[in-house]
Amino acid sequence: MPFDEGDAIERKAAFAYAAQDVWSRVPLDERISRVRAAMGHFRDNGESIAEDVTRQMGKPITQSRGEVATLLDRADHMLSIAPDALATDVLDRPGFVRRIEHAPLGVVLDIAAWNYPLIIAVNVVVPALLAGNAVIVKHSAKTPLCGRAYADAFAAMEPAGLVQDVILTHEATAALIGDRRIAHVSFTGSTEGGRSIYASAAARLMDAGLELGGKDPAYVAEDADLDTAVESIVDGACYNAGQSCCAVERVYVHESVHDAFIERARSIMEQYRLGNPLDEDTTMGPLASAAAHVTLESHVRDATRRGARVLLGGGAMNGSLFWLPTLLIDVPNDALIMQEESFGPLLPVMRVADDEEAQHAMDDTRYGLTASVWTTDTTRAERMARDLDAGTIFQNRCDYLDPALPWTGCRDSGLGSTLSRYGFLHLTKRKAIHFKI
Image 1: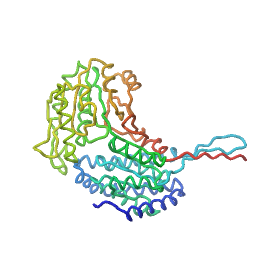
Image 2: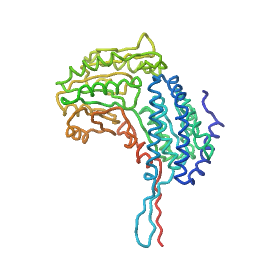
Image 3: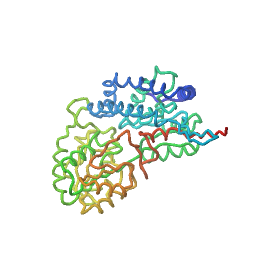
Image 4: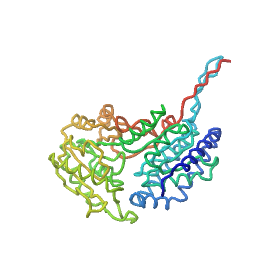
């Protein structure tokens, strides 16, 4: 699909701007009804939309179907909580009318990533619309049909032009952010990309939501349910070929269970079936680009130079875009594979002596999206959660977004929140009404 240019960008921005003015005056209950009806497009066309995801970026078809289901689940949750989340706060005081309204921002530019092309977008599109905003979805050039799916879903909804999709170059994206008709930008992507987006937004004193890179750690304590921990952590590292913002990218295992963890992890990783992602039996597809191999190769090479051992995988499958599930042990914490985002099916493991060593190693990072603690002792999990610096702390779970909780990062993992009631707050502005009567 060609990039949008010149008149096409102007036309779509103008349509969205005009539609938002009308949409903001539609009562909330009616907005909820119309958005709910529009989301039926994904339910009615789920199989073809899932196939589009798989053909564009290589996700196994079973996982693409799961992404459609997750999209609908998140949309349903945000629809259900919208009345409470967007309700006006009324403050009683004799002789005065005081209230706090959650007013729409205007036109929201949603810059969505290719790795979860449906559910990354829904995190912004649905709450933005419910809050009274219009949305321009700028999808990755790798997955343009997913941006088009959103435009198609809302094409028949009044007012026309409320949701537009665009395919833009970096230069055109920066120019659109500079357009006064854009009131907010939401970006999911690399930390470097986020800095560029944030600089463009800052030039206009405009807020931005940024979900950026991650290097999410997992700690397996000596009392962990090992079967559950291994199965979940391997899945957290290898699902979607490891191309997940909150994938498990480094693991710290207590020395008393280290060898058993490694043995079980290797057994599970050996069972992945790489192949045609449209095949129902395929459990891992290719990486989305050849450039990703350069990063993975450099991370593995650096780790082995520092003393790590590759027990499984370690490279591409027959020179293809498929990267073999890779298990490494004895990985020092200063290795690139423990410090910089890999975004591939790598599972680097470091042995630790106790909780304190694990906690120190987990926080030795510039990122802070999620962290998981695998233990049957909730006191231990609470203690570590208090001190770990990340947006989400899991106990006995990983690589999962609960739409009732805010999805947020700290440090180089981003700013702002999506999902939950806080996702609505980030897509609205507080308007104070102060009347003396």
